[in-house]
Image (cartoon, rainbow, N blue to C red; front, side, top):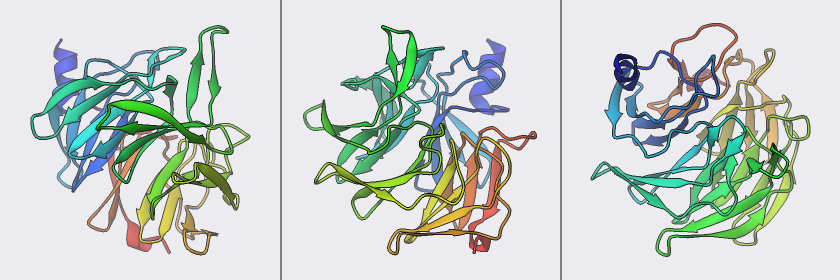
Length: 290
Protein backbone atom coordinates (compact mmCIF):
# COMPACT_ATOMS: atom_id res chain seq x y z
CA UNK A 1 0.00 0.00 0.00
CA UNK A 2 2.85 2.39 0.78
CA UNK A 3 4.42 1.76 -2.63
CA UNK A 4 1.10 2.48 -4.35
CA UNK A 5 0.77 5.74 -2.44
CA UNK A 6 4.27 6.83 -3.40
CA UNK A 7 3.67 5.98 -7.06
CA UNK A 8 0.52 8.10 -7.03
CA UNK A 9 2.56 11.19 -6.08
CA UNK A 10 5.80 10.97 -8.05
CA UNK A 11 6.37 7.87 -10.18
CA UNK A 12 10.01 7.05 -10.77
CA UNK A 13 9.37 5.60 -14.23
CA UNK A 14 6.43 5.09 -16.56
CA UNK A 15 5.85 3.44 -19.93
CA UNK A 16 2.85 2.49 -21.99
CA UNK A 17 0.85 5.32 -20.39
CA UNK A 18 -1.79 7.51 -22.03
CA UNK A 19 -1.59 11.29 -21.96
CA UNK A 20 -2.97 14.49 -23.40
CA UNK A 21 -2.05 18.15 -23.00
CA UNK A 22 -4.52 20.34 -21.09
CA UNK A 23 -3.44 23.98 -21.46
CA UNK A 24 0.00 24.18 -19.81
CA UNK A 25 -0.33 20.86 -18.02
CA UNK A 26 -0.46 17.24 -19.10
CA UNK A 27 -2.96 14.59 -18.04
CA UNK A 28 -1.26 11.19 -17.65
CA UNK A 29 -2.96 7.91 -16.81
CA UNK A 30 -2.24 4.20 -16.61
CA UNK A 31 0.83 2.48 -17.96
CA UNK A 32 2.89 -0.62 -17.33
CA UNK A 33 5.89 -1.71 -15.33
CA UNK A 34 9.22 -1.17 -17.06
CA UNK A 35 10.43 -4.59 -16.00
CA UNK A 36 7.06 -6.29 -15.88
CA UNK A 37 4.85 -5.23 -18.79
CA UNK A 38 2.12 -7.53 -17.51
CA UNK A 39 1.61 -5.25 -14.51
CA UNK A 40 -0.80 -2.42 -15.32
CA UNK A 41 -1.45 0.79 -13.41
CA UNK A 42 -4.63 2.77 -12.81
CA UNK A 43 -3.08 5.92 -11.31
CA UNK A 44 -3.87 9.27 -12.92
CA UNK A 45 -2.06 12.62 -12.59
CA UNK A 46 -2.18 16.18 -13.77
CA UNK A 47 1.47 16.96 -14.43
CA UNK A 48 2.98 20.44 -14.48
CA UNK A 49 6.17 19.70 -16.46
CA UNK A 50 7.55 23.22 -16.01
CA UNK A 51 7.51 22.88 -12.23
CA UNK A 52 7.99 19.14 -12.23
CA UNK A 53 4.94 18.55 -10.03
CA UNK A 54 2.53 15.61 -10.13
CA UNK A 55 -0.99 16.16 -8.83
CA UNK A 56 -2.74 12.84 -8.07
CA UNK A 57 -6.23 12.53 -9.54
CA UNK A 58 -9.05 10.06 -8.88
CA UNK A 59 -8.30 6.76 -10.56
CA UNK A 60 -10.36 5.26 -13.39
CA UNK A 61 -12.14 1.98 -12.86
CA UNK A 62 -9.73 -0.06 -14.96
CA UNK A 63 -5.98 -0.45 -14.75
CA UNK A 64 -4.59 -0.57 -18.26
CA UNK A 65 -1.53 -0.01 -20.40
CA UNK A 66 -1.12 1.01 -24.04
CA UNK A 67 -4.40 2.98 -23.98
CA UNK A 68 -4.99 6.36 -25.61
CA UNK A 69 -6.38 9.65 -24.29
CA UNK A 70 -7.96 12.71 -25.90
CA UNK A 71 -9.59 15.94 -24.73
CA UNK A 72 -13.16 16.77 -25.78
CA UNK A 73 -15.50 19.42 -24.34
CA UNK A 74 -13.79 19.73 -20.98
CA UNK A 75 -13.44 16.01 -20.43
CA UNK A 76 -10.69 13.49 -21.03
CA UNK A 77 -11.55 10.20 -22.64
CA UNK A 78 -9.44 7.12 -21.99
CA UNK A 79 -9.94 4.39 -24.58
CA UNK A 80 -8.76 0.86 -25.26
CA UNK A 81 -5.47 -0.57 -24.04
CA UNK A 82 -4.25 -3.80 -22.53
CA UNK A 83 -5.85 -5.39 -19.49
CA UNK A 84 -3.73 -8.54 -19.48
CA UNK A 85 -0.69 -9.76 -21.35
CA UNK A 86 -2.44 -10.66 -24.62
CA UNK A 87 -5.85 -9.07 -24.35
CA UNK A 88 -7.04 -5.68 -25.60
CA UNK A 89 -10.05 -3.96 -24.09
CA UNK A 90 -12.69 -1.81 -25.75
CA UNK A 91 -13.60 -0.03 -22.51
CA UNK A 92 -13.82 3.77 -22.59
CA UNK A 93 -13.94 6.02 -19.53
CA UNK A 94 -14.57 9.75 -19.31
CA UNK A 95 -12.95 12.09 -16.76
CA UNK A 96 -14.71 15.41 -16.15
CA UNK A 97 -12.03 18.01 -15.43
CA UNK A 98 -14.45 20.19 -13.44
CA UNK A 99 -16.16 17.60 -11.21
CA UNK A 100 -13.07 15.36 -11.30
CA UNK A 101 -15.20 12.27 -11.60
CA UNK A 102 -14.87 9.24 -13.86
CA UNK A 103 -17.78 7.65 -15.70
CA UNK A 104 -18.04 4.81 -18.20
CA UNK A 105 -19.25 5.54 -21.73
CA UNK A 106 -19.95 3.30 -24.72
CA UNK A 107 -17.19 0.81 -25.48
CA UNK A 108 -15.26 0.66 -28.73
CA UNK A 109 -16.75 -1.62 -31.37
CA UNK A 110 -13.32 -3.22 -31.82
CA UNK A 111 -11.18 -3.71 -28.68
CA UNK A 112 -7.69 -2.40 -29.41
CA UNK A 113 -4.43 -1.35 -27.78
CA UNK A 114 -1.50 0.82 -28.95
CA UNK A 115 -4.05 2.93 -30.78
CA UNK A 116 -4.52 6.59 -31.56
CA UNK A 117 -7.32 8.74 -30.12
CA UNK A 118 -7.94 12.22 -31.55
CA UNK A 119 -10.57 14.95 -31.51
CA UNK A 120 -11.83 16.39 -34.79
CA UNK A 121 -14.72 18.85 -34.97
CA UNK A 122 -16.42 17.82 -31.74
CA UNK A 123 -16.07 14.07 -32.14
CA UNK A 124 -13.57 11.43 -31.04
CA UNK A 125 -11.82 9.06 -33.43
CA UNK A 126 -10.20 5.81 -32.35
CA UNK A 127 -7.55 4.95 -34.90
CA UNK A 128 -5.89 1.66 -35.86
CA UNK A 129 -3.92 -0.24 -33.18
CA UNK A 130 -3.76 -3.91 -32.23
CA UNK A 131 -6.96 -5.84 -31.75
CA UNK A 132 -7.34 -8.94 -29.61
CA UNK A 133 -8.13 -12.10 -31.53
CA UNK A 134 -9.38 -14.41 -28.81
CA UNK A 135 -10.01 -17.25 -31.25
CA UNK A 136 -6.31 -17.60 -31.95
CA UNK A 137 -4.99 -16.06 -28.76
CA UNK A 138 -2.95 -13.47 -30.66
CA UNK A 139 -2.98 -9.77 -31.44
CA UNK A 140 -3.26 -8.32 -34.91
CA UNK A 141 -3.08 -4.82 -36.32
CA UNK A 142 -6.30 -3.23 -37.51
CA UNK A 143 -6.65 -0.34 -39.96
CA UNK A 144 -10.19 0.53 -38.85
CA UNK A 145 -11.30 3.91 -37.52
CA UNK A 146 -14.28 4.46 -35.25
CA UNK A 147 -16.03 7.74 -34.45
CA UNK A 148 -17.67 8.60 -31.13
CA UNK A 149 -20.63 10.97 -30.93
CA UNK A 150 -20.79 12.30 -27.34
CA UNK A 151 -24.39 13.45 -27.79
CA UNK A 152 -25.55 9.95 -28.69
CA UNK A 153 -22.91 8.02 -26.70
CA UNK A 154 -22.28 5.73 -29.66
CA UNK A 155 -19.30 4.51 -31.68
CA UNK A 156 -19.69 3.92 -35.41
CA UNK A 157 -17.37 2.80 -38.18
CA UNK A 158 -15.82 5.82 -39.90
CA UNK A 159 -13.45 4.26 -42.44
CA UNK A 160 -9.91 2.95 -42.28
CA UNK A 161 -6.28 3.77 -42.84
CA UNK A 162 -4.47 2.40 -45.86
CA UNK A 163 -2.04 0.59 -43.56
CA UNK A 164 -2.90 -1.30 -40.38
CA UNK A 165 -0.43 -0.21 -37.71
CA UNK A 166 0.24 0.18 -34.00
CA UNK A 167 2.70 2.27 -32.00
CA UNK A 168 2.44 5.31 -34.29
CA UNK A 169 2.27 9.09 -33.90
CA UNK A 170 -0.79 11.09 -34.93
CA UNK A 171 -1.70 14.77 -35.19
CA UNK A 172 -4.74 16.73 -36.36
CA UNK A 173 -4.25 19.67 -38.70
CA UNK A 174 -6.92 21.59 -40.64
CA UNK A 175 -9.55 19.00 -39.85
CA UNK A 176 -7.58 16.01 -41.10
CA UNK A 177 -5.72 13.22 -39.32
CA UNK A 178 -2.04 12.64 -40.06
CA UNK A 179 -0.45 9.34 -39.03
CA UNK A 180 3.27 8.56 -38.91
CA UNK A 181 5.23 5.35 -38.45
CA UNK A 182 4.46 2.19 -36.52
CA UNK A 183 6.09 -0.59 -34.60
CA UNK A 184 6.40 -3.18 -37.35
CA UNK A 185 8.31 -3.45 -40.66
CA UNK A 186 5.26 -2.78 -42.81
CA UNK A 187 4.49 0.61 -41.26
CA UNK A 188 7.65 1.91 -39.58
CA UNK A 189 8.43 4.39 -42.38
CA UNK A 190 4.98 5.01 -43.83
CA UNK A 191 2.78 8.05 -43.35
CA UNK A 192 -0.74 8.89 -44.46
CA UNK A 193 -3.49 11.47 -44.11
CA UNK A 194 -7.12 10.56 -43.42
CA UNK A 195 -10.09 12.80 -44.22
CA UNK A 196 -13.06 12.30 -41.84
CA UNK A 197 -15.44 13.86 -44.35
CA UNK A 198 -14.77 11.27 -47.03
CA UNK A 199 -13.49 8.46 -44.83
CA UNK A 200 -10.61 8.03 -47.28
CA UNK A 201 -6.89 7.92 -46.49
CA UNK A 202 -4.07 8.96 -48.82
CA UNK A 203 -0.45 7.88 -48.58
CA UNK A 204 2.20 10.51 -47.89
CA UNK A 205 5.93 10.32 -48.72
CA UNK A 206 7.77 7.80 -46.56
CA UNK A 207 9.58 9.11 -43.50
CA UNK A 208 13.36 9.44 -43.75
CA UNK A 209 13.75 7.42 -40.53
CA UNK A 210 11.84 4.34 -39.42
CA UNK A 211 10.04 4.99 -36.13
CA UNK A 212 8.07 2.79 -33.75
CA UNK A 213 6.34 4.40 -30.76
CA UNK A 214 7.78 7.84 -31.66
CA UNK A 215 7.17 11.14 -29.94
CA UNK A 216 5.70 14.07 -31.85
CA UNK A 217 4.73 17.71 -31.52
CA UNK A 218 2.92 20.08 -33.87
CA UNK A 219 4.52 23.50 -34.41
CA UNK A 220 2.57 25.64 -36.86
CA UNK A 221 2.44 23.72 -40.13
CA UNK A 222 5.19 21.28 -39.18
CA UNK A 223 5.18 17.99 -37.33
CA UNK A 224 8.40 17.17 -35.51
CA UNK A 225 9.01 13.47 -34.88
CA UNK A 226 11.65 12.01 -32.61
CA UNK A 227 12.67 8.78 -30.93
CA UNK A 228 12.33 5.17 -31.90
CA UNK A 229 12.91 1.76 -30.38
CA UNK A 230 16.40 1.10 -31.77
CA UNK A 231 19.59 2.99 -32.75
CA UNK A 232 20.08 6.72 -33.10
CA UNK A 233 18.93 9.14 -35.76
CA UNK A 234 18.04 12.80 -36.30
CA UNK A 235 14.61 14.28 -35.61
CA UNK A 236 12.38 14.46 -38.68
CA UNK A 237 10.23 17.43 -39.70
CA UNK A 238 7.22 17.08 -41.99
CA UNK A 239 5.79 20.20 -43.65
CA UNK A 240 2.04 19.67 -43.75
CA UNK A 241 1.53 22.21 -46.55
CA UNK A 242 4.26 21.13 -48.96
CA UNK A 243 4.11 17.50 -47.75
CA UNK A 244 7.87 17.22 -47.69
CA UNK A 245 10.28 15.71 -45.17
CA UNK A 246 13.48 17.12 -43.75
CA UNK A 247 15.97 15.49 -41.41
CA UNK A 248 17.07 17.99 -38.78
CA UNK A 249 20.68 18.50 -37.77
CA UNK A 250 19.94 18.22 -34.06
CA UNK A 251 20.63 14.99 -32.22
CA UNK A 252 17.58 12.80 -31.84
CA UNK A 253 15.91 12.26 -28.49
CA UNK A 254 16.51 8.63 -27.67
CA UNK A 255 13.16 7.83 -26.15
CA UNK A 256 9.96 6.07 -27.15
CA UNK A 257 6.56 5.30 -25.60
CA UNK A 258 6.58 8.74 -24.01
CA UNK A 259 3.91 11.45 -23.76
CA UNK A 260 5.02 14.72 -25.33
CA UNK A 261 3.79 18.30 -25.04
CA UNK A 262 4.77 21.75 -26.33
CA UNK A 263 4.58 24.39 -23.59
CA UNK A 264 6.12 27.86 -23.81
CA UNK A 265 8.23 26.96 -26.81
CA UNK A 266 9.74 23.94 -25.07
CA UNK A 267 9.21 20.28 -25.77
CA UNK A 268 8.52 18.17 -22.70
CA UNK A 269 8.58 14.39 -22.64
CA UNK A 270 6.98 12.50 -19.78
CA UNK A 271 7.97 8.92 -19.07
CA UNK A 272 8.94 6.52 -21.83
CA UNK A 273 11.77 4.11 -22.49
CA UNK A 274 15.37 4.98 -23.34
CA UNK A 275 18.66 3.08 -23.84
CA UNK A 276 19.98 4.63 -20.65
CA UNK A 277 18.20 5.83 -17.49
CA UNK A 278 16.60 9.24 -18.07
CA UNK A 279 14.57 11.67 -15.94
CA UNK A 280 10.85 10.99 -16.03
CA UNK A 281 10.33 14.59 -17.25
CA UNK A 282 12.73 15.94 -19.86
CA UNK A 283 12.77 19.42 -21.40
CA UNK A 284 14.17 20.55 -24.76
CA UNK A 285 14.23 23.87 -26.60
CA UNK A 286 12.06 23.21 -29.65
CA UNK A 287 13.42 26.37 -31.28
CA UNK A 288 16.79 24.71 -31.83
CA UNK A 289 15.26 22.08 -34.11
CA UNK A 290 16.01 23.67 -37.46
